[in-house]
Each structure stands twice: as C-alpha cells, then as structure tokens.
Image 1 (tube, rainbow over the protein chains, first blue to last red):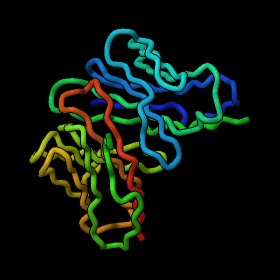
Image 2: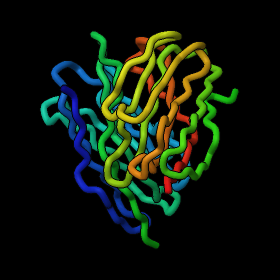
Image 3: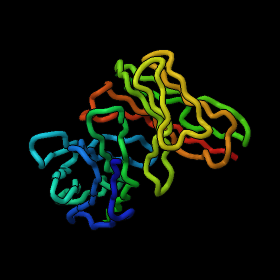
Length: 115
Length: 114
C-alpha cells in the first residue's frame, strides 16, 4: 500500500531563509509525486509534480523538489522565503496500473514566514 | 474555463438533517473524487468515480452516498448529518488513467454540523 509521511506539521522560517519541507513516500512501484499548496480558505493548487525523467523538478513561485529513489523522498525547497509563501503544503503520491486510482496525501505542513 | 465548481461554499446543518454537496466539472474528466479535510489529518478520500454509472468507496465512506449519472456532475449526499462530519469537503477531477496528471480541485465546501 502506498503512503506519504510529511515530517513536521509546522515549519517556521524567517523571510529570506531557506524553505525545506520534507516528504517521504512508500510505494511498491514507481510513484508519481505531487506537491500542492493551500492558502487560507482556498482550495489546493498544484506546485509541481514528478512523473518520469529529470529528478529535479521546478514548480511555480520558485519552488523545486528532488526525487530521490534511494531515500524514497521528495523534499520541497525554496532558496528564499517570502511572506506570501505562508500556507499549508501537501505532498501526495499515486502510481499507475491496476484499479488503484487514489491520490494519497500526507497530513500537511503549515509554513509560517516571519518578518 | 470554470474547472471544478463546488456549491455551496458554506453550510450549517443540524444533527440529523440531510443535504447534498454539489460538484461539477467542465473538463470532460472521467475520474472524480470527494475528499474531506480535517486539521492534522490531511485529505482523506471519501468516494470516487471513474465514469458515469461507476462509483466506489474510498478511505472514509461511512455516512456518505454518491452517484454519477453524468460525466460532469458528482454530488455527495449526507444522509443524516452528525457532528463528526463537520469538515471541509473538496471535489477533484482528472482524466481517467492519467495517473501522472494532477487532480484539479474545487474551492471546497465548509460544512458545520451543530
């Protein structure tokens, strides 16, 4: 069964500091990995995705993530945090084949950016 | 291009009442799903559908019914609302079989059961 673990339910950084949000997955077959962002009182917006090919993927708003198969990780980073990055971030995994259409989500990480 | 539209955006119910949360998409996506979001729990799958006339249970289906009579619409019914169903509900869609494609989410319905 597939699962996603986000380490740290709450991450706080200063404006201009590095953002690192951690995500580890469990999947018996090659995964498709996604990061979504949710701003207060809004729906989920796709930040970036990994399907196949290049393991370093770039997304919107300066975020990027690297797929590391050996570590079963897909951590999200941004070199310099902005106040507007304050939101909740969700890592999610799916995989192809069979009858499993599910997108499995982690429990989310709330990012706070301090001035 | 409206994408995924959910109505209502907010609703307050009394325990025991029934209601239907509406979800419609205009992207001709076969796959549609309903999630509930609770603090510290992430998003949990309630029910999903891979096409008109086909539905199946997700992780937390109890207390909810769904049907899929058209490709566009996927309503979620609460038969007898309970306080434990207070949550934010999201509908999502994507093309069937497109496992490597992201799901498109609606803006959510915030439901309170008193």
